[in-house]
Length: 278
Image 1 (cartoon, rainbow, N blue to C red):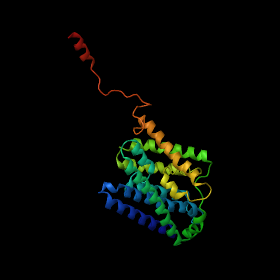
Image 2: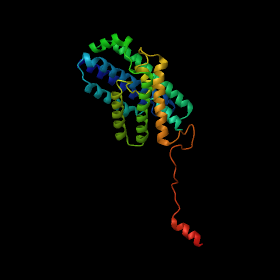
Image 3: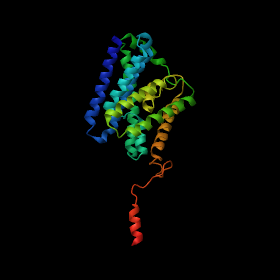
Image 4: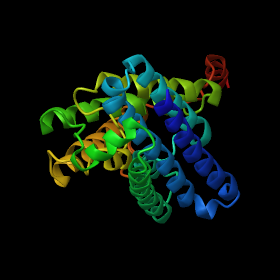
């Protein structure tokens, strides 16, 4: 339990930092990219600790998969309540493709998200180096030789991330106008389910900055190979989801390729008969 208590304190510190930044800067839309930094930092920093509990706690601390899944769900739910779906470069690019964001804010937001992921990696490394518990002492020894989350071939990994991103973004697009009380818990459940289901493949991060913080620094694959799976794979799934949802990609072309648009207004049959009598 001492390991979980230390982890709880770490989670609270990260959440308070992210929530404070978002509260202070929420009134200034010009600094929206800093909000993305805080969101990405919170998600990556917390998920790194969840990953530690999964890798070390399950065999060294006697924690079962039900505990780790519950912790992951609570982390995702908390992130959803505080930050929504921010902290994900694919969501920012989705808004750009939907003509809801311009080029410069999009680039700044994506850069801030990757910076937040990198800072989270540094902060987590420092936290592990304190060796507050046996679990963190073991993690600190393993930090230089971390195990990769990509456990299959590049083709299988690309397909896994693409399919998971397709499912995630399709549901996200259909729920984006729903009330937060419905949307946030459903998205947290979905992400937890996808991550657990794809644990033996890619872990289904569906987030380029999250994948960068969690597995790009691990040995086993090159940076380019990781980017092919976790960046291009999830990007392809996002584009397919947008195409299936809208029938076209507004930023690229306006013609609907999949669905026929019906006119909303129809002329009543009675009006046509009166015109003929006239």
